[in-house]
Amino acid sequence: MVVSRSRITIDLDNLCHNVNYLKSNNNEKILCAVVKANAYGHGINIVAKKLLNLGVQWFAVSSVNEGIELRKIIGNSNCILIFPDFYANRWEEIERYNLIPVIHNFRSLDELAGSRRSHLKFHIEIDTGMSRTGFNSKDLPKLVSKLKGLHLDGLEGVYSHLASSEENNKAYTTKQINLLQTACEYLRGQFECINYIHIENSAALFCASNNSFDLFRSGIALYGIEPTSGITNNKLKPVLSWTSTPLQIFELSKGETVSYECTWVAPKNSTIAVIPVGYADGYPRSASNKGYLLVNGCLAPIVGNICMDSMMIDISDCGIVSLESIVVLVGSQNVASVTIENIATWANTISYEVICNIAPRSDTTYLGIE
Image 1 (cartoon, rainbow, N blue to C red):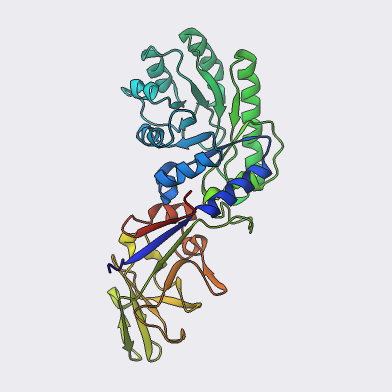
Image 2: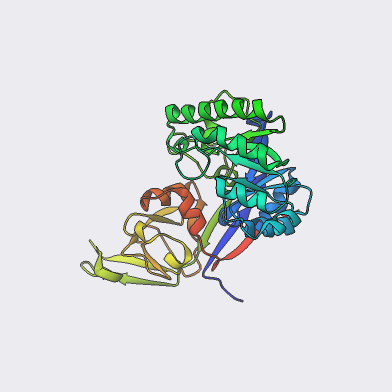
């Protein structure tokens, strides 16, 4: 029997629960499932098929390459939106795979016009305060003039990206929503073809906002991870769990040290377990001497610096632990749990970074495949 160093379990029934919950709270809007970055590390091939079976009609990715990969998975009947990317010389592929690019500046607009594909569907991005990509509001008259002069027939949507909804910054979020509404009123006065307006992301879905937008884009909430530190929503169910078993267990005397740089000194005689997961597997090194794993339902602290391929935990207070004991890096055991959000806090980062960095060295099992 081959024993893997660690195991990822993806619970598709929890994904189903999250989709239904998000839809029920936004039943007048269309769900656009954000599946970029390999479905936030959950596996695009299986996750996209499940979302398709759940009736999701819109998907969003971050590049032409991701769009092509997704199209080959889900077939040709659903909409795939590409967030700003380098489109030059790829218009033939965008058309062939029926992708919807976001036009975010005058260069990408000119490239679309130069492709002689005036019928190609596209969305326009307006920068309402993210200061990343998108047209500035002051450029809207020029944008309208160019769109009319280029005779592009495929404009069907306008969107923007919220900058601070994750921090529950309602004032700034409201400002951005109002700016998009104003821009869209102007654009809809010039073009009758705009059918979709969207700005809400996962975090914004849990903040009351009165608007008449048509789509809502959900990424991290689909996977059951809290999108904001300001709001806790216990109705989301984590889709991913992560487990391992000890590679070695040994006794350490008081005063002895653990791992590189000797950053942890045993305060008493201790029992240490080596877990074969490290930063090459996506567990952040910055959680060294801060985080915990679960053993026998007990929180076992990470001691010493996390290595490339392993980490050490203090199991002195965790009862009888063997090389066959299940160690939980993400998930629940008895009544205790460790979440992606916990790891992000220990590592002084955000949940998005943690979940996207979990490397494919672990064996992955999918539950709930139809």
